[in-house]
Image (cartoon, rainbow, N blue to C red):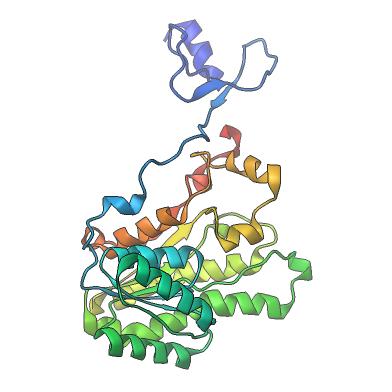
Length: 315
């Protein structure tokens, strides 16, 4: 390596000998130095998808499957329910509000032509979840897929967070996941080729201010996922999780995202330069239910545009 090339590499200059930049790179904001400018990656926030990710799947991909989705009346979980129903799966959704479930079930029936069942239950109540599972098996003949998506969250400084506030989030997110798994176990084992899909998060991968309660709960969800994958694998039950990053147009983003210009700045911390979509999480859920993931268990699939693995110095 000649001296000019060595100097160029030392300051992070990615240009070739002709001075051509590789795609996606630019000099960083002016930094005076005897060695010339430093360099950093340039993102493309204007990127947009021309194809809905659910469109790539065969229309009958999930035919023959029956799924119960907790928290299925809204947001990401509603998106998963819609994708599953569209691809031929029989779907039941549950949450605490029957009127919301009725509206969502009617919407999904109209959109997909599937028989979508909505049954109200609180995931903190094991008996209520057991009753929902019984309703699903009675209606559809079996249950081979459980999506634990019910969750609660809010911003709170740890020093001001009440024990009840901490406990409530843990009871919904973590205990609710366990209650769902336990309630569905016998039905899943009987059905065979079964899947439990837990909706986790990325909060606990790093220290996250104002989120100690949710971080602790979701770390527990990941532990439940891996332990049950090992324990229940011999019973024909795969157990995986999806950890979404910032997803646009969800209740979580409305509650937790920074306002205005800060939200745009937050996108700069995501290598793909944008927030994710509900359909992108639903697409991951479809793949994990499909035969393409038949040998995948105990995994937490992070869908966050690279946010968790990005080093701040490159953003």
